[in-house]
Length: 91
Image (cartoon, rainbow, N blue to C red):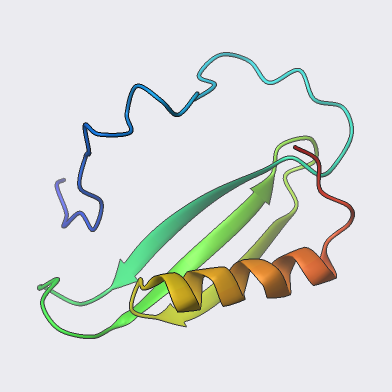
């Protein structure tokens, strides 16, 4: 089944951002992955809600946040609120 995609592949930064695709050897909590889901019905046009899911790699802890649109202000606010609630994050 194929659905709509709100992510567009970019080439400008693709080779500059390291992405770990093999096994994560992480035993301490604090390393997160994030993913988004559009709640748009049958069209990506216009304004609609998105869900951001943050998942800790070591223990599968998840936190979901709703945002309106996918603009930087909403995404950064969601990130700040999640980081305040979570345990210390690592980089």
